[in-house]
Image 1: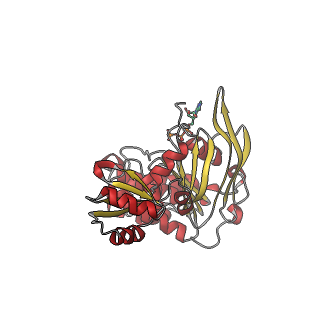
Image 2 (image 1 turned 180 degrees about the vertical axis):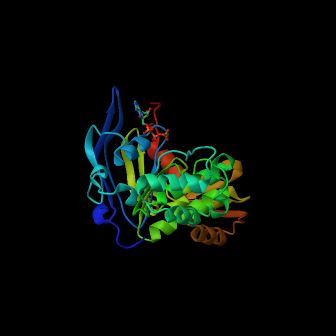
Image 3 (image 1 turned 90 degrees about the horizontal axis):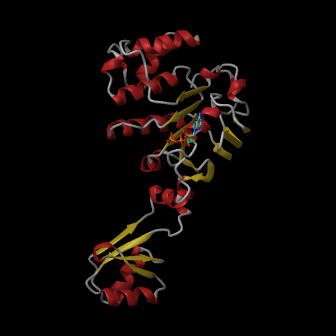
Length: 311
Ligand SMILES: Nc1ncnc2c1ncn2[C@@H]1O[C@H](COP(=O)(O)OP(=O)(O)OP(=O)(O)O)[C@@H](O)[C@H]1O
């Protein structure tokens, strides 16, 4: 981040408080409250139609809330003195004039926003698109288009980044790049808010998660906290030719044993070393001992079950 930026986005903390959006009969966002901290990547998760885009649009003053507030550094977006230098946003897959080159696309935005022309080159460099600067937009791959969108959002060197589904359509290499890029921005102290329904991706990318369903907050916390809040906790998958003996031995140490797929046993209430020890003491042969940790996908499905109504 460059020095001398306007301080009006404050520390870049995003606070959503009682935010509501009513569309005729549909409450797209319903009394939603959460905070997004600077210096961290926050994943904004929810099933399709949960209200993510509507929330982000209210944050960026593109949709007027029916109630509540959304502020960045204590101010509404509309009250920021120079928002493009403070908040960078991508709300949909990048689009540009087909015949325009990448660099010219960014220069046009710089000119319109009163930003120095060199920022176009710097932003292109930042996202690794400098070698394709003079290629036309229509020849860009989807991944390159996404990078160009991020370059555009970075033109004002903003303290806060808000990205709606930036990983959509990216290949694994593109996703890896995006992950590193956004983590670096957070490490520089910026606020990074990324919406997604790609839960497995968020598990690798985000420090914090805000999960919504049907317009309402379902859970907010660090990825670790949310994973830890999973009802069932970790399970261990075990295979043995001596099912009965092992079940007896594990029940004796207060573990719960249930049949899993393909003849495996799922053990809860004891970790792998404890199971191994109990098996050894009972002279039971083990063919597999695998700890299965709940992933964000499982937590998400559990937390949003029944709330992903078609709207
Ligand atoms: N302008 C509008 N008028 C009426 N309904 C709307 C409008 N914009 C969004 N909605 C509805 O509000 C609900 C929330 O939509 P939103 O796009 O915010 O969800 P989302 O979580 O971003 O989902 P997706 O991942 O599918 O984009 C949806 O049911 C949508 O149809």
